[in-house]
Image (cartoon, rainbow, N blue to C red; front, side, top):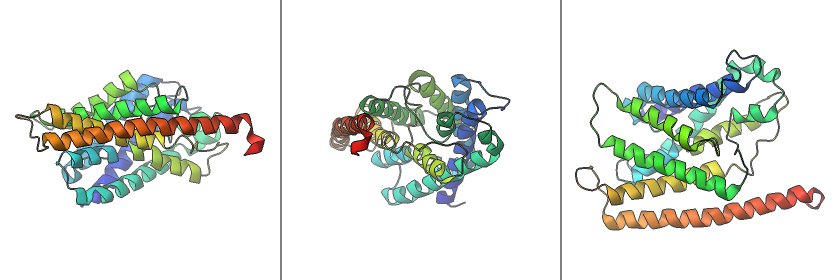
Length: 282
């Protein structure tokens, strides 16, 4: 199987299970309605684990541009394949979210909560504060990338590494996910958000595009920080090909991205508040 197709299939499987568990919990007249955050976290962890088992041997099982970028930064993935992985991950996310909509189509029609229906496709912060939301996504993705790399230096038998990564996703969700819904993956949010805008969902509201930069920019900056910290801290016996200078350059880029990202997020938040306060002027 070509690696690009494997990434498309794996990402679609991940979104089908991940978006599916959210739909199961929030849509009316689903037998799992009201299952709660723990059920959603477990569903996403198993979603990633099963997607890696499905196609990981063909593509490495990234399903996330942040992971692909982090592996390229650390020299574990060729830069030439990064754009192709990004594209097919996005297409896979769109396909997976379409399948979720198709599967639960009657339940969308009997659910009045438009925000809950949107949450099946893309993330919404618990407290909307773009700078703080961005920091949450940066921290969540930094630890994701950092942990994937240090998990990778351990020896596993019987194909247990995908299981450990699945538990990593659960751990991040249980500990850090309540602030933003922990996208920690640009296409996990962007692909389904596009589909939310395109699909004929009864009673839907806007796709909240003003927030969409947070779950895209945050994971990109976060993975730079996580990968560079691994490059600096894990040296002997860690299969680390990054030089100290190279790791420091990437770390400075991550710090700079965090600083300017927070400033940009603050400006976006201020503009949104002005529009909400005086909509007739815009």
